[in-house]
Image 1 (spheres, rainbow, N blue to C red):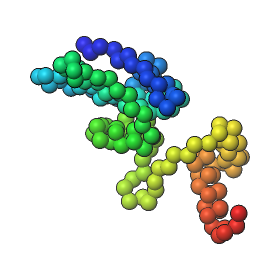
Image 2 (image 1 turned 135 degrees about the vertical axis):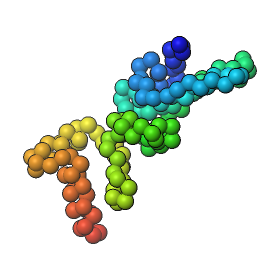
Image 3 (image 1 turned 60 degrees about the vertical axis):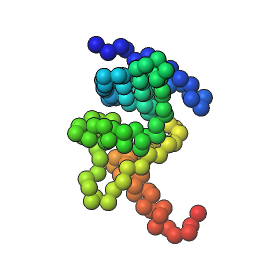
Image 4 (image 1 turned 180 degrees about the vertical axis):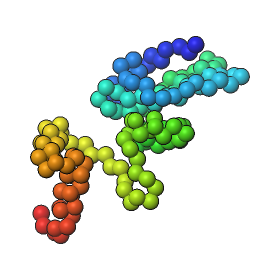
Amino acid sequence: MRKQIKCKRIIDGKTYNTETATQIEGRWEDDQHFTYGNFLFQTRFGAFFQYTELDGAAEDDYERITPLAPDDARKWLEENYSWDPDLIERVFGEMPEAGSGEIKFTLRMPESLKVRLAAKAEANKQSLNAWMIRCLEGCAGEGDRS
């Protein structure tokens, strides 16, 4: 049985803590000389980070936390768990089919704006995504108008 992962770091003024975050996936690998752990976590507020640990000869031991942008976290899952598409889509939502011409784009906005946009979408009987695409298409089609 593996030890429980307990690691906390402050990076760029933000706390990354394996005890309060959700472990999405990861695994330990054993070699005759060392044990290597590589895990993906998500904080309570949605930020992703990678936890790596090397247990071997004392001078080689280390624990590291690396913050990851959402696209990098998705790529990490794709590289390490491509055989489990349900896991990837459970974390990042349904992925567009190859050749669809769609891309996934992460947009950060104030929560109050999201609430207002969701209300407008609901009033138009559309999903938030569909309504926002319609609005963006309208803006993009208006030429140089500010």
